[in-house]
Length: 236
Length: 187
Picture 1 (tube, rainbow over the protein chains, first blue to last red):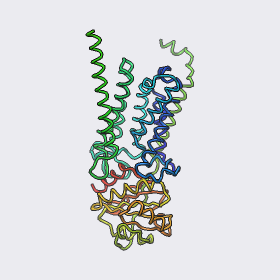
Picture 2: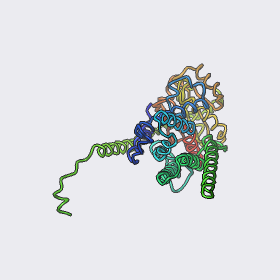
Picture 3: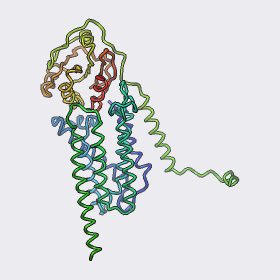
Picture 4: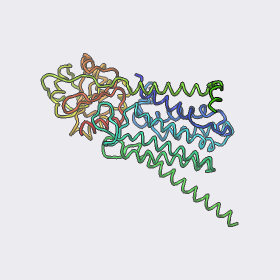
């Protein structure tokens, strides 16, 4: 059965970032932004889906029809890292900087993620905590604050900031690490308010906290090292 | 300036702008369709004499009338009815989620599984595989799914404590969606 809401979400995720974002420097995205990013998106989706199945229902891994039902769950972070690995691999093939290419695609990636989150409106009505200020998902009596829309807004702000900082000279590696930290932070915070079953943290919440801690720690280490190197140069 | 703008020939719309406009229009149409498509809830409301809930963790064969009797007997408690089949892929993903929900919310929400378009041995095998603890009904004739107006497997129906069908979720459940429905039903 075709899920119109999910289909519309995917169409928006695929088109909006490529329509409205500025063209990228050809030296980092030789083949065009869509050629590069669609491949990463596809690989991320496949790896994310396979990981979800491996965790939840390994018996279904051998069934192509089960694998193809992405609506049943895609593991976010394995998908993201697989997409980044694919980008690195193809950057090597194209003889361009892998980190430079990733950094150039960060705003588009964040806008694509924002589009997916914002299209919760047409998938499930954007659930969140009960709130007088909010939407009423289909068939429910409770109004809920649309967490998905708030996440989308935060992602767009991050995309704009990182794009600006990158163009002003922030190192590509720091842009990529900062983007991962920001996404993990947004997801970890949003997960606090997302409805879930039981009292324990959801898997996506735990994963986002771990990624946030690792990426954030890495960013701090690199910043400290950069500053130390700069002050050594000035002193000498 | 005004004169110039009047006499100036119309600028041709380049193909890139046209593509952008077309894409935006297409997306807007898609969003409009998705937002205005008919809702999942049907007019179903159980009637008849109240009957007890089948034993938890077992697969009990019931007719459509008996199924309605079970729902009538459950008035006062929100009910989640999940129609599934052992051959259905998304059912495999959502069954552990429903089981977890049963463990966490069995005091305030009843979960009823309805195995339909299936063979009893396969349904039982499926329940064993996922250690299903909530009551399950076997819909041998297919009348239960017909009365519920089933459009595809799996489908989950959420009934309020008043027996009113609140919402219908066609396709696989996500934890977020199910938790939202439960929060709403128990509000």
